[in-house]
Length: 288
Image (cartoon, rainbow, N blue to C red; front, side):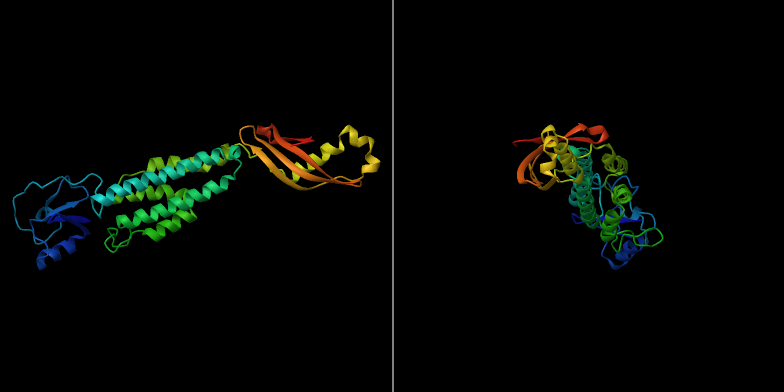
């Protein structure tokens, strides 16, 4: 059992029953000092805490103030800060899920948002775990084994985020802060399924399938068919994007058209013909 002490206007701990008993014997603490432990409704005299010896008989006295909501092993100030960190972790992962879902419209790879979310939430978990005293010398299981500390939590989040994220948001509740397991599971599930729900990104102008379609469009043009013997082979080289309209999902490219007659500058556009089926449309233009 972890016990918190309120003495001379300051909060200390947590301590084990044996540590409290030793402090009582050496005079560091007195039986009238206030204590709080998990399951205790309010601050009470040390003498009223189960498992403490010696236990002089003293009448109960009202504490100067009720224990703060969300009590943590390091006090009220850090408890409030920890709540902010916990909700910040949820916000980061939630925003990442939304951005992954819209990554196709943004023209960005969904993996980038996933990596940022994993790294950011792992760092935040390490910061909060240290503030809450996770893995400290006093933070032990009933069997005396030290609990998971900040470094271990960061490693778990980085290596197995989909499990480590909700697991951490549950484990933090042992330290007096809010249990965020349920919203953690919901947000983690959103990050997991968002890539499957996202629209595919419009291929880049230099993607092999785009260049192949542009070359095919030129070969199939009526004007080229009349002069096919003179033109010979057709190759598009050095394609580069001029503009990208995210709203219309339209890319404009500039490239060099190489034939037996020489080279010339051409322009082409890349658009969706059927986005749900991943079918694109490439159109040759005379000007951008």
